[in-house]
Image (cartoon, rainbow, N blue to C red; front, side, top):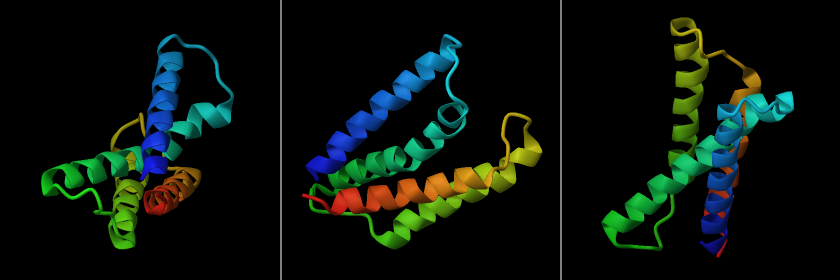
Length: 115
């Protein structure tokens, strides 16, 4: 579980740095600019969900099963890549985002299994 806590901490720092660079309009390479937040999203959301469940259930041994992790992945992929793009100009459908959500989901799933 230490691996997940350290990863979550690093992901939060990276996301904060990314948002700060966006705010100050500092140019970034396109891959980082367009895709880093999508990769970080699912592990961060699932980590917060896991910590909340462990807190409320008062059981630090709880883990999210693969079905739950893939359900969150599917929800994000459908909502942000299928539903929102036609409704708002800010969102674009991109298959690379879906793959990054999936990679982030599996990264979280395996990190939570580590000691």
